[in-house]
Length: 290
Image (cartoon, rainbow, N blue to C red; front, top):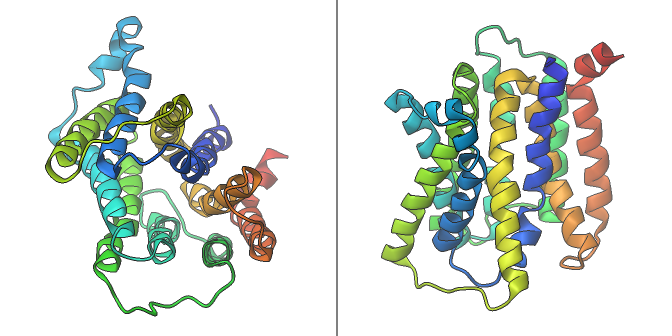
């Protein structure tokens, strides 16, 4: 498989993450850790159910403890901190802080062996960041008007965690993607433990809420992690970093299309910024594809 094809596979994760907000809104009032546990259980089972037919898939779990620390630490710590942050600070602030991770991926990927950061990567990523800021703030001036809160401090490590997880996954290209299922199942266990310690159990009231939860586990909290892992290890990490800014834009478009959010001029302008940034960042890949 070519590098371009692997990059496009990784981009599927960005498309699936765009459904996260809409599906979460449709899932009811289930507490954060309970939701994380159930969706990661579904996401891990998505791959694990194939292991009886693919013995080499189960064998992929035999990895060094450092690989397990990377996977579990990345998935669990990121989601645990994110959910805690949005409960203790404005969601807009948390989203903007968290979405610094694509920029960190692009900048820090230049230090990876065999990779070279170029000016057009930086320009494309900067445009994507500007577009993401527009769509998240809806064109308003950003600032910590209420001062720094606990949620802000919890959010500051988020971009470092996800960028670190992604970059180190790139360094472990020899590790099969099947191991991600193990990361998901371990995250489900840790999340359920946190749920029992800190939350009250609330189950969905309607079949539509269960459907949204299952969809979350199958797509943005399931298949997305597998294709992201594959894209990182075999695709163009600079292009994937720049394309990641499509996720908040697509997420807003989904919310508008489903009637959960109203259209705003910032969405159209953000579309221009993010699309232009993506084209600039991936110009080498586009040129080679012709």
